[in-house]
Amino acid sequence: MRGWVAGCSVRFVHSLIAWAGFLGAWLLVAGPIYQAAVELREQDLEEDQFAHVRDEMEQLPRVSPWWWLLPPARYWVGRRRRKRYMAAALAAMTVEQRDVLATFKNKAVGWMFVGLGGALIATKETWELVEHHEWPHWLFWVLTFGMLWLCLLNTVWQMANSRQFVAGEFSASRSERRGRRRPA
Image (spheres, rainbow, N blue to C red):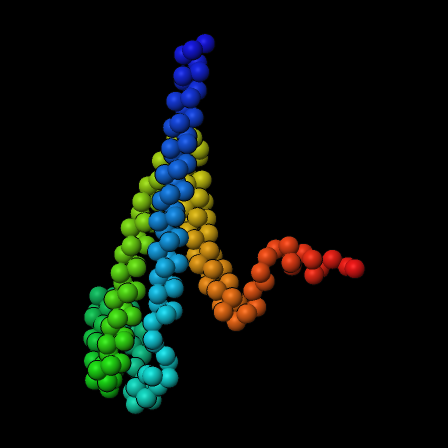
């Protein structure tokens, strides 16, 4: 009997650790996505600041679809055009505008790396959870993409709630909302 109890508790602990790793890793994805949204939203990047640059620039000409017959050449032609366009756009900007844009880009790239690192760890932990419970492998893909969507939806929901809060449209408590719905 003692061996059975010890075996059950070891299996329970292993399951608990697998679930803790899974949930913790996905929090390492959700956190950076949310923090990136918060910080990039706070960045002083207004569209009207760059309106004169957009107005001065001519539209980037489209690359002919015939280039797709030679994909490496299509990539090279498109990249060359984008580089020329970006150089012209940067030349039309003031130093302050380039600084704001560079800061925004650096923050976005930094958070992308942190989020990607978390996503890789979360993918590994999701695989470990599926293997530990001996679930079918298709469930790994469902869990991975489902959790990624939950992380993204969490950010969208949190950002919408913060906008409502700032606008004063946010109710103080759930009980107050229930109280207003009840008929008298």
